[in-house]
Structure formats: structure tokens, C-alpha cells
Length: 355
Image (cartoon, rainbow, N blue to C red; front, side):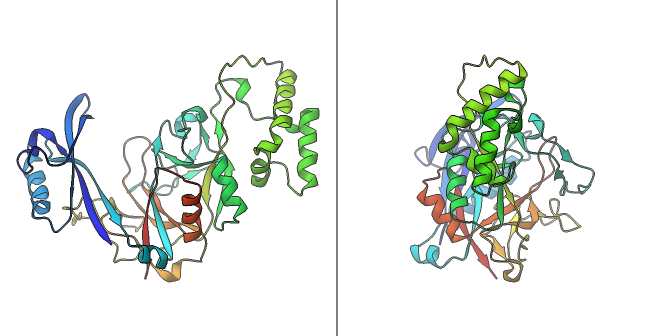
């Protein structure tokens, strides 16, 4: 395994360590309210003599008002084919993020049960509601900035057909901008009742998760359009929208037993700050730290063998407004193979170790 550290270095300070031709200039980045700075992407290995110096310069420049040497960072891990083949679990580290969040679109959360120290534990108590037209169209697996994960109809079909364990998918509802977007009551129209009967004929119960997977396949498109038209006529609502029909998305809901992060996993604030004071570690054990600094290690006896699982401990912080600590997602080699086969782009997947 090879580790490469990527830093977004502020251009005005870059010359203190790097030559003009080192790295890649990325242009302007907005920071600190209305302040814009230019940044340069620099990649280093941990054994590069300049690596330690990056941390030292950052500590030095941070003493200045709004000062920093690097604005962001990431670790890219590259594996040999044999390491990938031998892996039992993978961490789904990241996916493209978008706004607005579910809470901003009408999703209801119960925050009375969350930890007052770290913010962990709030519970979603309504179906996920998003602006479906704001979800990136060219992606199949994405998340809101509040870590609400959603999956396209195309990818759901592949995962459901493969009988993946430990997960279910519930339809994402569109934020209600008008009565045109209201959920349809199938039993109130002739075409809707025909849909209900057709589903029952193949053993699918109305409003179950399987019902919506089946309903949104292209084979049902004609009868669904007819039912929607009849339903709007029943409501005496005219669909005046010139936009295309709403896309179908599903919330990824992990149902398996949570897995435990092993103590060998390192967390911290950045590669040069392991948060020795424990600012981002919940004293009640809910949050393991701000972010991972190492690969993820999982206690073997905590994994029940499901294809997808969440960690019981969270990472992150309780920020102002919508941001909360989040669980980490583990996937099996079977899911990774489907993501590759379906050419799902924009994901960051690395090996997770069982110990």
C-alpha cells in the first residue's frame, strides 16, 4: 500500500517551501466569509523531507489572523492487486456531496435524544425529503452535506437484484413546492388500482420498499404516467411544469448490526495534529475523533457478515446548524464489484482491516 498526502497550500505562502513549478495551481478558493485566496495542490509521501515542514509552517502561520499554510488535505491510498483481492471489507470513504439537506427540505429529525456533548444520536423520524432536481444527475451514489446517502434507480436495481444484505432502500420524497409533487394515492384512480393489482400478482405489497423498486422500473412507466395524470385530474390540479419528470432516488438505510472501530485506528484533526487533548473525542464514547488519520480497523467479532454496515462510533463534530458527527460505512467485496461493474463514479473506496 502506498500513501500519498494531498495538501491545498495557500499560494501566497507556497514559495516558503516549494518551487514555482511544484504542484498544481487550483485558482481562487473562498474562505473566512468573503475572503478569497489562491491555492496550490501539493502531493507528498510521509517520508518526503518536506512533509514534516508542511506541519511546522502551518503551526507557525496559524498564529497570524486567519492564517494557515494549507487549507485542506486528504490521504490517497493505492493498493496492489493482491491486497484488493485479499480484502474482506472496504470503507466507502466519500461520495459527491450536494445541497440542500433533508432538514432544509422538510425531513423531520428528533434531536431530543442526541448527545449534548458531541451531537451524536439524533434520529430521522420522517421519510427523507429532498429537492430531487438538485441531486447530481450524472451520479448514482451521492450524499447531502449532512451525510444523507441516496442511490439512483439504476444502482438500486443492481443492488436489489444481487440480494445485498444489511441494507434497505426507501424512496426519497420531493420537497413539496406544489400539489403536483404530492405523493400519489394509488387506490383513488383506475390506473392506480391497476398498479396495485399488478404488484399483488407478483407478490409485492403496496408501499413496501420492493413496491417502489418495481414501480419505478421502465416497464411500469406508461401505467404510472397514466395514474399520475388521473390523480391530478382528481385533485383538479393542472400540471403546468415545463421541466422533465422528477428522477427516482432512494435513501440508503443500513439495517445490519453496527461494527466497532478498533483502538489501533488513529484519529485526529490533520496529519500533524492527533488531537492529544481529545477535543473531538466524546467522553461517552459516541465520537471517536474528528477524522481518520489511518486506515480503518474493525473488531472482527463485531461484524455479522452483512454486505454493508455502519460503525457504532462516529467521526466529525457538531457544527453550527446542520452538521453532526457521522458513522463510517463499510461495504463487502460484492458491493465494491457492483460499483465497479456499474461504473459508479466519484467514490473513494479503500481497504478496511478486520482485527
